[in-house]
Image (tube, rainbow, N blue to C red; front, side, top):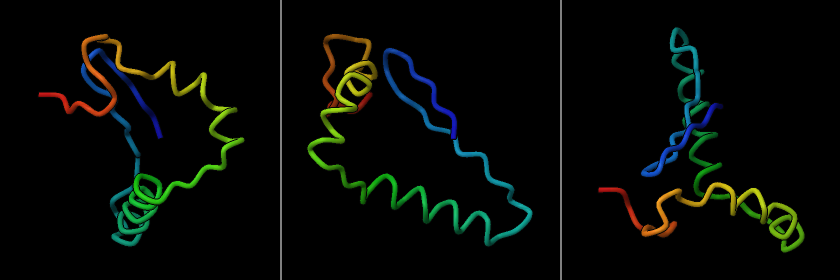
Length: 69
């Protein structure tokens, strides 16, 4: 997976071969689980706090919960 970010968005790219339908199904299932079912312990969150703060929106007028328009 690759990611890039700008002041307005963070984009994650998942490269998946599409010649086998099962590859695409599996990749979408895994990505969906990653995006919706992530669980972290308090220790894990404390350890990653700096990385999370580094990916905050570059535009200080936006917060992490505001959608881009």
